[in-house]
Length: 193
Image 1 (cartoon, rainbow, N blue to C red):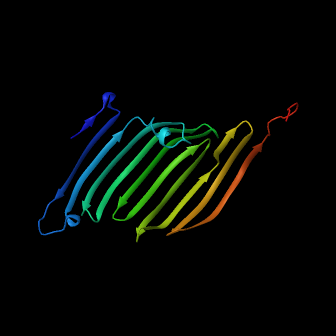
Image 2 (image 1 turned 30 degrees about the vertical axis):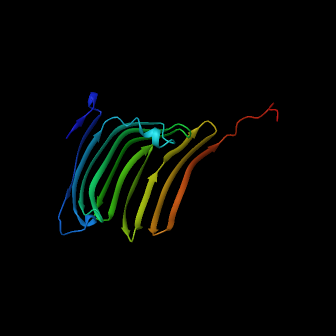
Image 3 (image 1 turned 180 degrees about the vertical axis):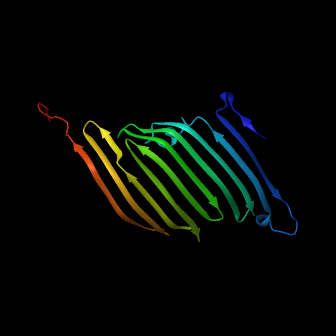
């Protein structure tokens, strides 16, 4: 049944079912279900991700559940469209962030873009689970990203980094160029230790 919150901040529709077949063991009973949700108020994200101070945007998801109780199958997609994501401690301001994730069979595909200062970045890749271990590749590329912007430190970076995941092993390759960085330590004249 759909759930609508006051102000249309959350729309949720979910259903789940188990097909009972007497000839099968309980764990081998058929499973079916759907979950659709759209959240227009992402103010709770900082409660769960403490490094994030503010998020303005929407999160939409649609998942289907199948398989059996012993071996459930999930298929679905998730989309984040955020006009602003702020991390105040380092004054990182991500703007116009779009992230799409798709889970199909045992493979998660990720495709996203964002802006930080005058620069922009993208992430793209796939991870597949085999014997409960992830395997796949991710690539982060960006140009002139304002990553740290506080009075003591300002850093603009251009990453081009690939990550290969093979079970518990993660290999990272690439480069991060820093076209601009300024470090100005706090004045300590007259400080008493």
